[in-house]
Image (tube, rainbow, N blue to C red; front, side, top):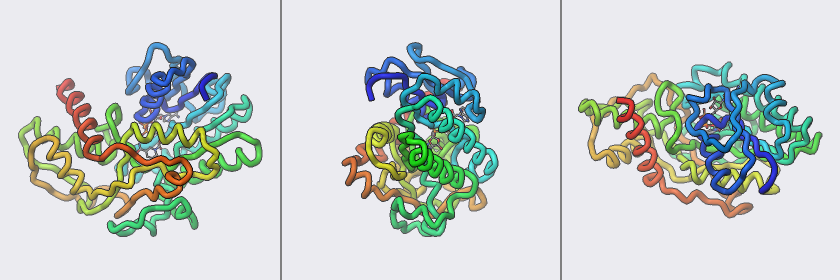
Length: 325
Ligand code: NAD
């Protein structure tokens, strides 16, 4: 795993940017970072890395990106939190072109290992109707009824990875990420997810002196959130493993959205008046990650408590927002 070119697709984004940083920290010298966004909008960039701005929905761009790479991480997708994916289903589904063309390029250039970032949104909606969740096992993805748009694209792309492995011998590995959060990610603009959105709203209230917060849904929805450092070491372990089927990569520390707001209020040192927007996109009622398989096969468990990860995330978003002001 330690020599040869590593391609990170979606490197201008949240997880991709952290992955590039982590690879450099581990001593990898030959990293190619690709994203659709103009360089100025990437969350993290490093002078020693080759940067390319390419639209990976395009087949020729995928070939340009993949040529000479030994390992490919596909973290590129048109995505965001519930507010984005519930209102942009076609755009989410078009990410199928990215993974398909990357797999074709990986076959053409005989890539050695290919990582695909799937999502907990592949899980059947009828398994997530109650806040008193039973954690989702990998087998719960079938019979299939995933999140419309985004979840179907992820499920289809998982299958593409499987069939490219079975039919063409490409070593593909797939992780189903459950809500990842941390610094250097989206916190406004409509694509942000709950942890970053709650931090932003609490900071806005603190800075403006208007001590109110709007919460999407009734606040009783339950979720688990995985800190970025845990995600990175889990990804690495899955890519190096012999696990052939998609596997959960997530935290199993369950929290309600109200509980998450309590936590951020405590970090900020203030209490806000809450209003609940029941019309806003709120996703499923309850979701948690069953980590039995990953613990058994890789001994992996998330090491970061939600409160600790949220402190770091809050601090980063606070600095960004105060600098902007
Ligand atoms: P992100 O939006 O921060 O990063 C994705 C990056 O992909 C963006 O920088 C975007 O510009 C890039 N991209 C989109 N279309 C592209 C294209 N056509 N060509 C090249 N680049 C393109 O998202 P993230 O949180 O870093 O997520 C990374 C991956 O993990 C995605 O596949 C996402 O679906 C998956 N995932 C993330 C989470 C999470 O909680 N963050 C949860 C489940 C799955």
